[in-house]
Image 1 (cartoon, helix red, strand yellow):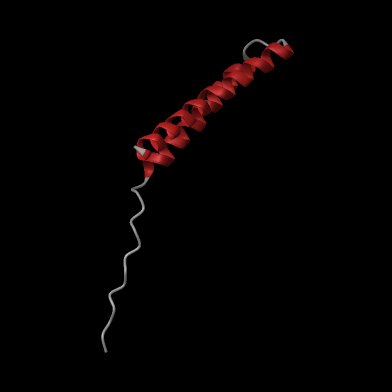
Image 2 (tube, rainbow, N blue to C red):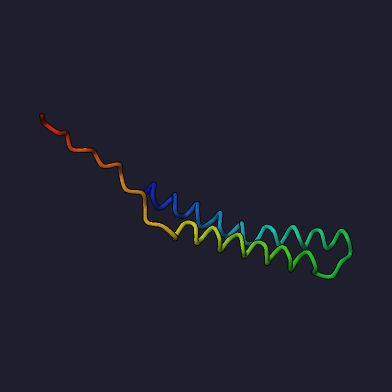
Amino acid sequence: MAVAYGWAWRVMIIGLEMVVPGLVGYWIDQRLGTKAVFTVGGFVLGMALGFWHLIKIAGGPPAAPPSEKPSQSP
């Protein structure tokens, strides 16, 4: 069950990484009166960060436990 919570947490973080920069960009656009400049930039940045994080998670095999060296007898 703990593994499932760990993966759910990772997926939620990646989703937030993709959405939050766009929402911040929307807020900046509203404050400055610009027309979706920062919103689009924020969502593009968020998608790039989210995909980078997904690739980082899925990119490599899980780390193998350290192998024990066989003891050598004299």
